[in-house]
Length: 98
Image (cartoon, rainbow, N blue to C red; front, side, top):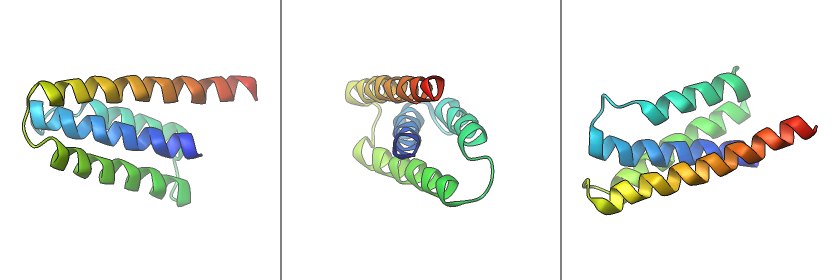
């Protein structure tokens, strides 16, 4: 559960920095969050609420940390994407092993 919530937070951070650079019409990372919720927490409950809170808090924090689109912001999205991929891979391995 902890990795799932962390992945939601990473998606929120990635969405926050991408939003700064590309505007509100770019929903790339938010769409991944919607898919994650559909798979991991399709119904109301503690896990879903934790995931949504992690996404929203991380989105807000990223927008505060990166208020302008510059190379640091672009690099941050790449770092978040890499971290998200690593978390997703770890979650997938867990499901395939259990």
